[in-house]
Length: 332
Image (cartoon, rainbow, N blue to C red):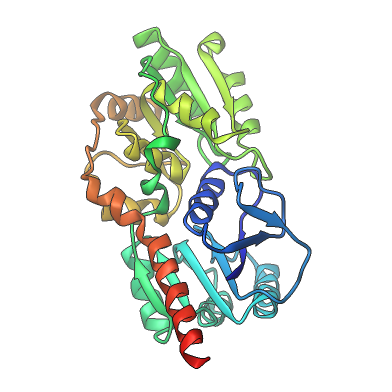
């Protein structure tokens, strides 16, 4: 099949890895994208606006509308996706709270235009099944739980603290947490910048370092290639994770972590995997609470069944495409 692969192309590690895993699972098809994506070695950039067999969106929080302008963009996206291909699927998503009824109506109209949706939490599964009953919808753990061994680093922990930063977090509390960790352990804090695009985690990391009393014990790790962040995480004894996928990857690599939740998608994911540790709020926590939670954090030791189940997003997609191909052959 001729597939148009879409997603968030703006230097975000989590989204790039999601797209990479999807593309790796679709090697029997022709894959095209609208933007250059260095991590997608089997995809070809194209300016073509129509003529594909299937449109596939790979997204996490792709059904989020912030304002009235977002509603207009949503309606534009529906028309664009319809022109691109007669078959449409979205994998790896979650449904977020809506700012108002108009935003929810726009999202409902959007999800009803798909043939297949895979979601990553129970709340989203229930929502899609209730509001788009004709759409095939399946739930699996976040796709990054299926990161294969060949994509994971083999380095050993150096005892550092890893903090994935976002601008929405209490940056002064992050700086104090890093200072306390340095004073207690003599180890570094690695400031993990998962997004080096428009969301700009790097500026947040620089502000944390500017507020720190132990600047020499801070190292800013910028996402340029996936290994930059993955290798840095493996150097850490524990992760303080504001970015959703920092928690997922830490769990995948069995590194103890403390979530700094900034949205309900983190809460839903943690509930689904049976997380029983401390969950802090990204915009309202203090360094004492963070350090206590970090000291108490233990590896989750998730069963391998979680990682296998996370492959379900791509497996469901391939199953859907195979059924379509078989139906087309029967019609001939």
